[in-house]
Image (tube, rainbow, N blue to C red; front, side, top):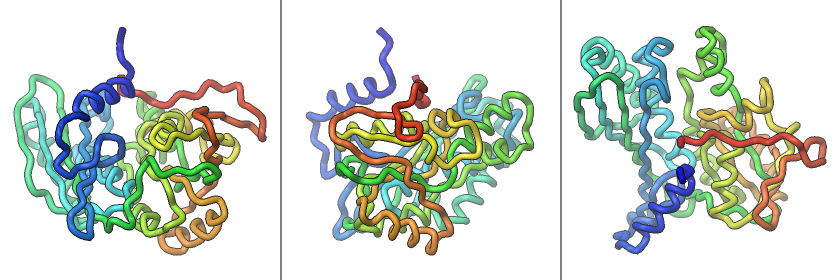
Length: 311
């Protein structure tokens, strides 16, 4: 029987859980965590594969380079950390070993320069016909500011930064040949919420946090599982300019999904807007039990919403 992505990762965590961790925390968050003095190092890795995560004919090499960095440092932001360094590995077919990879590196450099991030190592190899990109992102955060998926509490407000569904709608536009819509441009050049993640990490009232990479229909379940809680989400409260399915089941928004103490939400939202200019919208609450309930105007929804899965 074919495994789901979640069950495959769960099997890996179980198999390797008995081995020494040497100070690293177990699998389960956006980044692995290593305490270092009064600070914490966080590290994450992600892959982008041609024709799965990007289309060479629809995105410039510079856009792919920039996006490759953003999707990785988004995981660092989700921990409340500041990205400091990356490692980059590329597997390139002959058709990408000249002008294309030069453009890719310009885009990757642009992102690193924008956020003051060092490129400290990596690897290159040849491939037969498709491009494969792997990035390791490293960040630092004070121990008191780190945010985990496992910290949600019953009664917390579930909230999100920004607007959802833009990247998913952009992918559909691209697939239909509409390469220049605002959504298509946003899909090709996503932006990580670095300042927002750092600010929210400093807020004691923020409990659990992660980035939205696979759609909230999938990502909220990570918080539920790690925190042993349930969730209710009101569909009409989700901030989006598109069909609700784009906002709930589409991937690569790279906004932040978090839970906040119910009596502190307004205060945190106002402070985030003042500090970064980014909105924070309440979309539901954390409940007892382990059930995810979608609501429409307070009543259970008949929509069957499932987020993106990689398998």
